[in-house]
Image 1 (cartoon, rainbow, N blue to C red):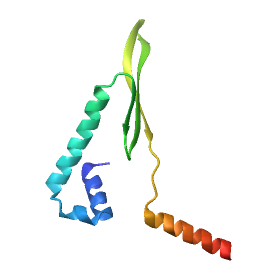
Image 2 (image 1 turned 180 degrees about the vertical axis):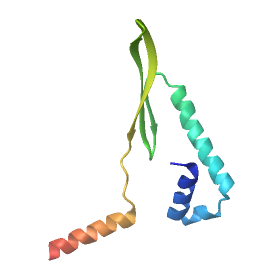
Image 3 (image 1 turned 90 degrees about the horizontal axis):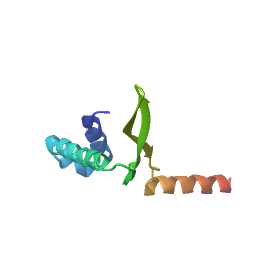
Image 4 (image 1 turned 180 degrees about the horizontal axis):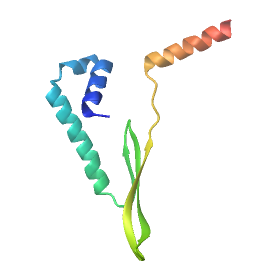
Length: 102
């Protein structure tokens, strides 16, 4: 996924973002992802959680390479749960009420 696709998707989903110049929006995304990279690089063990995105689990893993132990950092990502918006919850409740009434 390209940064431009993220900016375009955000602009479609949130009309207020259409006023932000494209260069500024791209710069903001680069900065945000840079912050996440820095946090991951500075963490040797444990978790880094990014609200609205998910958790990165970081561990040091030993492997043998050419008969010698080599320690490497392994980063695994688990996506967070997607929260439903207010309108989606209302639609779901209306469907359920309609199904129960039928």
